[in-house]
Length: 427
Ligand SMILES: Nc1ncnc2c1ncn2[C@@H]1O[C@H](COP(=O)(O)OP(=O)(O)OP(=O)(O)O)[C@@H](O)[C@H]1O
Ligand SMILES: [Mg+2]
Image (cartoon, rainbow, N blue to C red; front, side):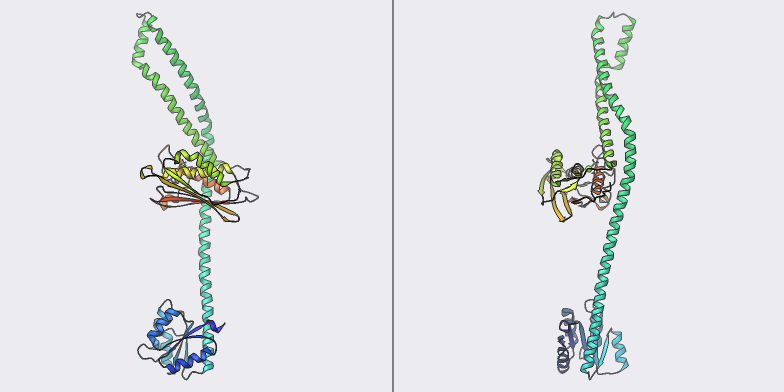
């Protein structure tokens, strides 16, 4: 150990002793500090953090024992080793010193060689202690980081298992509903034409009514039936009912399409090299109508390399996040802001962030946003599939998606993507 780097505080009320010890220590290139009282010693120790303290026991005012006790009970000075120098070569003093936490003793008259040896040994010990402490801090940090990684991996695993099992369920349900909805949809369009034809014929019969013999029992019966059925109302309402049902069926069909997208596991996707910012811009174009009355969009694009990806699917992810951002902004509270940033994380990864000044989310909400069918939106507004589909897509790309949010302030989604896909890409 280079002695010149070690500093030693000499505490003695007698200047001659201080001078003597200092000279001996300097001869070995130690840096020396000195204090002539206990109070001064405490101040210097706290300010300078010397590597070792030579402490006289008999001093006026604060004794060496008290100084040692105070140093050892102060978190910032407790690890500084102390050599207590005493004229009293008796066991009582040593025991009291040990009780105060003193590491070593030297009795006056102090031999220079003994002083230097004890100092050197204690400094060596301190060095190992410091190394050990630094090592254990490093170890603790590594363990903490390992734990964090583990819990992240666990969360990902749970999420992907959840997605996989719900994906299967969704695929099954989508498949089962798809056929009946298909024929209901096509039947309804036939029904619409048939009903239009029937209403047409009815109108013709109605027009011909004055030409029929009014006293015929059949005509009488027709008049009664017509009055009780309220034909004008039925003719109008039946068309509305058909239109509404067709609308409902279209909505169900859209949900089924979403479910199919969600469950889709394209076993052989075609990876292409594409410009992510281009995908972002086209998603922005599609979402314009959702966004334009609610928020201004700020693009802070950092340049990105082209990446190997499934551009249509990435576009879908960006669209989902942008639409969510717009939906989170309350137009009553003035124009909101959506900021889109991008950048290169390292040679192999890029990132995109989309922030909004919307309603934000609580931690409890944040934990669930990637769960399929989790939505806080009104029936008909959201199905709660947007983010779970997005999660699946980013996972397929070997990337990461996560959100941070402050209720009442806004939300930021961050997506990280690899520039290149592993050769054996799992899907
Ligand atoms: N930017 C955001 N700000 C606040 N809440 C958000 C934001 N993005 C998502 N959320 C919350 O996460 C939920 C799930 O979002 P997700 O996109 O999966 O479904 P959705 O938007 O409700 O319905 P869908 O996207 O299927 O139409 C939302 O209902 C909302 O509560
Ligand atoms: Mg959504």
